Amino acid sequence: QSDAHKNDFFRTIDTINKAVGVWLEPETSSTTKRLLYIVWDTFLAVYATAFIISEFLIIETIMGELLLLVPHIGMLVNTCVGFFEFAILISNQEKIANMKRVLQSESFDYEECDNSLKIVEDSKTFYNRVTITTCLAYFMVSISGHLSALKDLNVDSRAGLYGVNATCYDFLPYLFVIPFQTSTVRRCKNAFFVMDAGLLIIAGYLGAHDTLLYAFMSCIDAKFKVVSEASTSIRERAEFKMHLDRPYLVLRDEEIPEFEEIMYFEIKRCNDSLTKLLK
Image 1 (cartoon, one colour):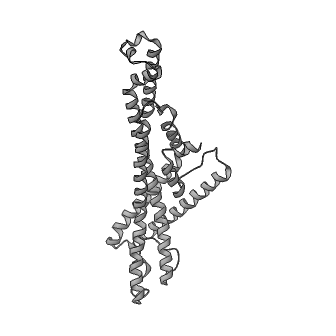
Image 2 (cartoon, one colour):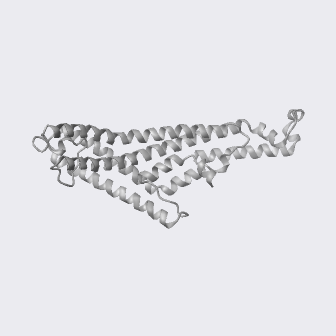
Image 3 (tube, one colour):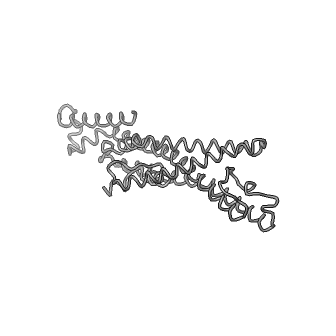
């Protein structure tokens, strides 16, 4: 079981999904563990919902300012898409788990194919790098906005302008209704963290959805390559299983019924694997 977990093609994306709140434990897990993930998923989803609502509520305030309204609508669409993708992932957990099981079933294990394991491992390594890079890039949207706003806020604070010529809303890179008073610089900085949390949750949803899609594409591509190699080496693998010496290789297949039977079995096996990938 430990080796199976170590070789799990989707281990990286599963870890990310657990962290960002789009994971439901299978029924075989303990009740405590399942409940823990349900509570975590629900907490993040409720926070994201409240944040999106606050983004909608601010529209009334900036309705007459196109320079603020247009980019805000673009950001609002992005957050709504992120929550929609969360709904897709969380409502299709069983289907996703079934797809993972099919793609990692033993029917794709062709031990006699020397490159089959390397093909899968290379694909897994590349996909892991893409997954981590993509998620970090999504999270940087929130982090970079926070750092930029914090720099401007500190400049105005030192100049004594905060609360006189500027409010906290003037520094927010992504507008939303702040649920508390921001009369001081400290409270404004707290508002930045409220914004960060909402954006990071949405970024997690977007990253989980996009990287899971890429993970499936990478795994399917690797399995196609494995089946392709297995198909082109059917005869060689049958000869290997029969332990045939070189003089026997020139004989016709029908002269060795057992050899012909192994050939048929391998052809059927490759066809079954291909059928699973094409479904």
